[in-house]
Image (cartoon, rainbow, N blue to C red; front, side, top):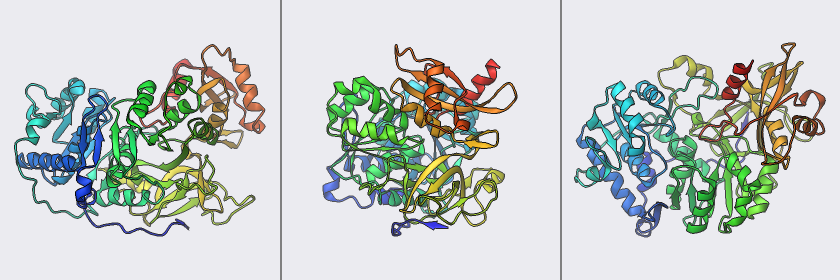
Length: 530
């Protein structure tokens, strides 16, 4: 069993609202919390807290309380913070929903979560109202933030003057957020995260992520994803930094916002790191205010991180986590201290973990050649670990053991100086003639090719029904790159069993909104062809 090299931090036994807003000072009240690039409107911390309390009061006046689940379908706009934290202040549980979901997908999540209230914005109203009607949420319980006939709106709720309620619950057991797992390896499941889980993970993250009140954070990763919710929204609010919200990613708009608002800290997913490293349009903008880039949600290869960092003259760090961990368990220390770019950093405070051999089930306890452990599945225990999956005791039992360790399904190694590297997911390892091949390793190699803009690798069956690695490649425009070129490039850098044996050029690699490669989509594409 391995513990974090960092000293434990105190986890306050309070609600998320009290943790984030209970200690606002007079100076904090005037600080800018949120900036809307579309309008230039700024919301101060004092103004945000007032909105949160007013929204909580309006909900309470309508019967919302500790038994209520509210669906939230909303892009990254300042009102998201008001609604999410107002709902939590009223004692409700919020299930955050992917803004790209269809009506059918929204309906499934609302139904599974048991939501009786729903909040959205007018551009998403068509699918939202269809889903709401299907699960029996009446129009008066479907709040449209920017207004729509027949529905409550944010302005009306904030100005009605209902006082915030007195609510009482145990932060360790009361569910604050109910995000759903990504579904990249199965049916999405509701992840039960308590107030204590969310408070703990912000406290833990502060140890390695050095956000300051002077920082301006470009919030492009979606708040509905737990990474965006904890590391962008809640951590930034706790540190009294300013958030510049972006409803969706567009590279030119992303760079424009950095330039116009002087953003200093970027929280990104790997595809954005690839753009920062390779896209020519980056050179057309002054983004010299950026001093730190933190990548998460999916593996970022070290070379891409180094190239991006050199190109924009900023620190590039990364972390590891999953929704079930609230979500961060590992993060690169802000002072780096010889931690390579390919690493996910150290285990955050108040956690312990195991590395377990996937073949034997034995714990890996010693370091081998080069001061690195053998690869093993990462098991993690700490105050950030979820209560379990909603209404799915069997799935919970498969993931959470009797000792409280979460079985992540990810393969990692520990280096002697305390930092971890993630090799791959258990279910995504390719087995070629008995050898295990990690897709992430090949993807990192492919991305180092100057004519490859993006890549993904999956296992497919050859004529002999043997699993072999196949690469899906997005080539640079007018590159004249061929399948033979790609295979030869990989073969020159890996052991024979790791060679890419098939290549298909594709316009875009399918990814979730959090930046994870959707291998199931590539497998479906492969099945359709064969």
